[in-house]
Image 1: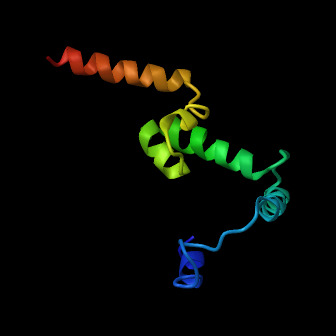
Image 2: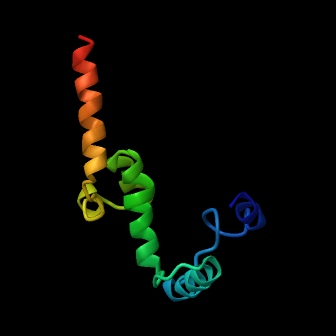
Length: 102
C-alpha cells in the first residue's frame, strides 16, 4: 500500500486516486479470481468485510470504525455492527477479570 500511496503522492486530493464503484468491482473480481475466492467480490462486500471482520471483529471501537468508514453519524455504522458471540464472551471475561482483582 505504501508503494501505491507514494506513487500518487501530491497528484490528487487524498492518498490515492478515486475510482468509480464499477471500476473497483472489476478490480475486486480480478483479485478474487487470482486468489481463488469463489465469492462475488464487490465494493459493498469489501466495505462490509472491513467494517465487520477487520475492525469490529478485532475489537476496534464502533466510533473509530465510523470515522474510518467516513460516516457522518454512528447510526450509519451500526448497520455493520454485528454482535459476534466470541467478542461478547471475550468482553465478559475482561469484565470478570477486572472485578475479580478489586
